[in-house]
Length: 291
Image (cartoon, rainbow, N blue to C red; front, side, top):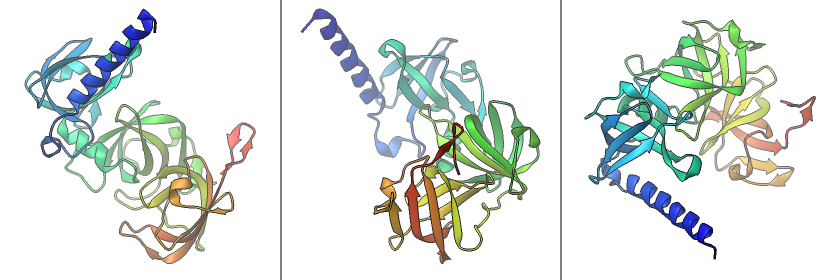
């Protein structure tokens, strides 16, 4: 074993030990959102020093991918003050150094967790090419939520495909989101034309098909040919096929094309429960996946 390999192994062991230490706080002491509860010791433009609930202080670097949220809005690191409590999601940066993935106040952490992997309806507060800020319709007094716009995000207005520029602040939207490694959420699809808090449209004629954008514990989110997002529930009675073979929901992956035949029942969230779900690999035409 070479000296260089030994050095790398020791470095990797140190990184793993630090991550374990950061996540070693008791579950009952953590916030409900994903991440670790910490107290801010100091903040500079390049690093954040935090105190874990085990009393151990750690310094984490700030890299280009580090994100900071206060009241649901993206802010600079220096907005955080010594002594305040925050939720930290660390990640390993270049060279194995521990960096801030996401640092946010508890309100932002709870909002992120609430809407992770489920449709979000609300009012569009502001938008840019890279970030949309939405006020959830079912939490008017709570924190808004900042969504990074995915490069593959699709948009529709009134059930018709549209450009992102068709949306303006104040618009009622329903969006599909996806979790990012940092802990933030990205915008995968947006549909305008509904009222804040209204659920996604229910497919007609007992059938819906499209590309899978999200997979929940017992539901699939699809984008159809019109760019409209649908949530289809799957129960124990649903027959699932993948590439024409008997399968389960766990065998379906994001990006597959799914056809779902719907029954008359709905789940607790109001999504129609499919009687049959058939998934296949999406067909690529002209460099794009067919919906």
